[in-house]
Length: 289
Image 1 (cartoon, rainbow, N blue to C red):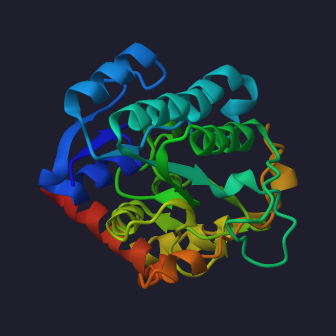
Image 2: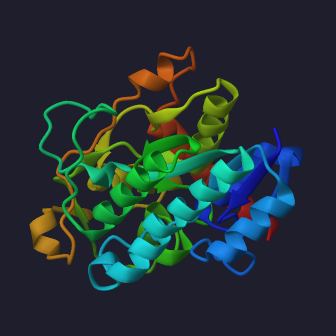
């Protein structure tokens, strides 16, 4: 595989580069490649001539998207369109990542790939637009929907991963109030990267759901993270309405991974097991710093 990784300095991008290893022909972040600039995208792809383009670039501020809608659409919709166009011209396959937030949360069961999307806010709308533009581009493509991505170092746009922020607040003695009425499947960035590459090697095309096994609320994730880190702190369970955030979130957004497993690929490990590894690696990294 000869791969190009855009958004390589982000949470998922870093793990894609690590998992691909010597198969990475080119990788870069925003400084190296503005994915919303057609001239820059086309020239980079033409120069590298990759077989696969992995798009790790994204605008992930769910609430920020309500006020920075133009930026969200530029990164989450226009950029995938340009990458898909460049992939089509180069005869490459675009691997693009999307989100559970394309759904409204009204389902009583895990969402299938063919369920009708109905995003609740600007972030979900921008991600769905990206999916649709990739699909309509004529490029060979693989769209991977996922949810609640976490990992060592976290998302820089959000100031680190959710669990890292919870641990920081707990150690500082600040009160913890976490939403307990939203259910999703947390997904470990290294596991997601490995699964996306496995899909590529299996020749997958179209849309696939990929998350770690199991589901929980944000409150469950916070309390499990504290327990695994050995930090004792009370966590108040609150409703999403109590936070009064700018963007609405789906109450239930668990994704069904059946299509992924139908290719003979093993289910991803439980989110608890992945979280334990993530925290262990964070501690090891802190000791080695």
